[in-house]
Length: 151
Image (cartoon, rainbow, N blue to C red; front, side, top):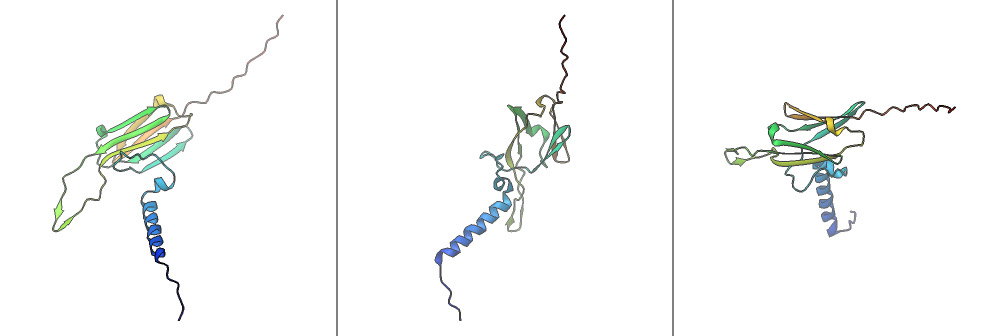
């Protein structure tokens, strides 16, 4: 028979580790240091950000949200997406009451690089996906300046 040392705090430590794993799995943007969520948000839509040679593309999952309820602004190099998913009538089945889909306000902010052209940003919505296209500024090509000899 092996003697096992009893540590009453080990159970509490295990619970803390389990809770940390739950929150890290549920909120990956916070675990990765993404601070695009603010306290005023009820939920955070999932986004994909892709860079192409001539533009950046942000795609956000916003099913069930009317485009008129989405506000996109650009100020001082920061793109802000905010809106609201309306609360639908709740249903009850037997003794169960279940609400799983996120609702309420959302708010995301993204710092754009200096190469982004804020004047030509476009946004489109289709099938519950918001797509924001941010063109890049055209590169200024170096210009050769001729030195002329004075007479």
